[in-house]
Image (cartoon, rainbow, N blue to C red):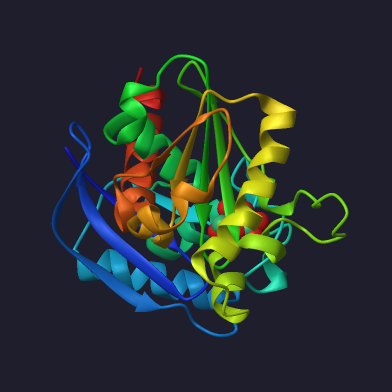
Length: 253
Ligand code: BGC
């Protein structure tokens, strides 16, 4: 079955059709710049435009870069603040007229990596996926099962007094013009904190930097295994589509 996945980010909103059985993207992705300000009404308009672009009707999975509890967005670090407390799932359902399922963007990427990406080899124990982009997204799994909405990008860094995503996101690397080893040292500091709290077996490094893994991985000194994500830019779309497919199956059972 083909299911539409839509990945909402701070700068772009991307959609694609996914084969829900094998996680493969079917055809081209469609990207529209995130409207500024990224209010619920403006973002819902773009989500609807993506649905129309694919001439699609069926379940839709949508990721959002915030805490998403029972379809409601509870934070808004890198999007318009009017999303705090907004009934995101209802807003997208009303705009598209379709059964929409909303989840956190890093949770979606994690679900996709664990099912079709590098996480397939790590179904036992504790796995932490971290996405480094404008912010830092997180997803933690125990024996393959997700604990949603962990928000490790907002954990304060000891002795620094700032959130981890303001210390070592990929945006910080670019804004402060950090060399890869300088940035890696900060990431290692953050991973050390994660290791102290959760003793993971594996860290999966996602987001745009996963393509540059060789440039910074040699500077990371953790006990846990550290691997790059495999699904790159597509993980959010794939995880969103999978989630919508599973939710429809569960409601039909
Ligand atoms: C948000 C998270 C999101 C991450 C990556 C953070 O600022 O709070 O919900 O997963 O950015 O987009």
